[in-house]
Image (tube, rainbow, N blue to C red; front, side, top):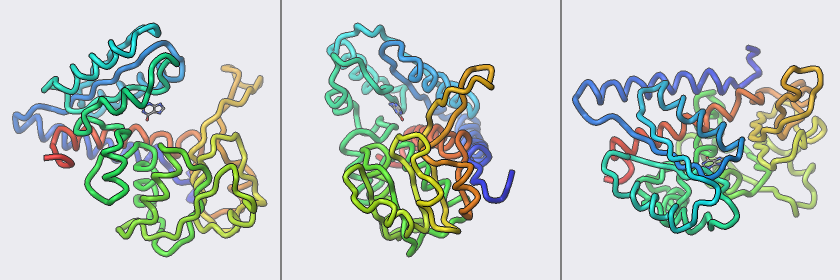
Amino acid sequence: MSKKLIDGKAIAAKIKKEIAAEVAAMIDADQKGPHLAAVIVGDDPASQTYVSSKERACASVGITSSIYRLEAKTTEKDLLDLVEFLNNDPDVDGFIVQMPLPDHINADTVILAIDPKKDVDGFHPTNAGRMMLGLPAYQAATPYGIMELLKRSKIEVSGKHVVVLGRSNIVGTPVSVLLSRKAEGADATVTLCHSRTKNLKEITLQADILIAAIGKCEFVTADMVKPGAVVVDVGIHRVEDAKIEKGYHLAGDVDFKNVAEKVDRITPVPGGVGPMTIVSLLQNTLAAAKKTIYR
Ligand code: GUN
């Protein structure tokens, strides 16, 4: 792989080995191994794929997983009862409720019902708030994955101008907080851009590190990036492609081919940020089992 590429797949594989060693050590010491539960409501194909890959990732590092598959017509009350059950199940260290939920269920109500000590997605306001204040917290998978990716790729962040495109609660906003914090692997000057930003290109051209998390296929073009910048692409989109047997290929928020020619380092799609997000969930689950965040 070219030195220009930030190889998320390889970095994720290395972290998985580290997690597997820790899990094996717990089991060797006759401790209970980590156990992740995942709840999925309905049959959204993307969610099914995500949950299956989380299940496989757990198995690959020796973490036990249980999947609760509920029908799309499940009531909010029944889902809340299951959340309560998992909150109280001593064998389950952490659990996630896969999003999106069907329209008749209020996702915020469900997230608020999860015990923050078991919220390995880091979605509960207690974890989001603790993260913001720099207190120990389960961090949302994608921001955590991006921070690890930068750290393990030895990309200097301190004092750099990072431009984040997108202000979502699960990516853009938390990653800008993490990057601007006074901490190792952070200390950046961060500009957060969004759909109402006026002079977008003027700002992106100033980025030493550009993080694209806007959910628009190949939105970032070569004329928007400074030569020598580092580009992190969080997007993942299916692009119809008759030349490929499955009928599509994957692309990110960045016009990879043209941008890659201009920059110093760049994450590919797939194989960049994606593999890191699942690893973050495994790290959070291990932390839950070891009770390192909440004692
Ligand atoms: N849907 C898409 N990404 C995620 C995630 O990280 N966690 C949950 N629970 N749902 C998702």
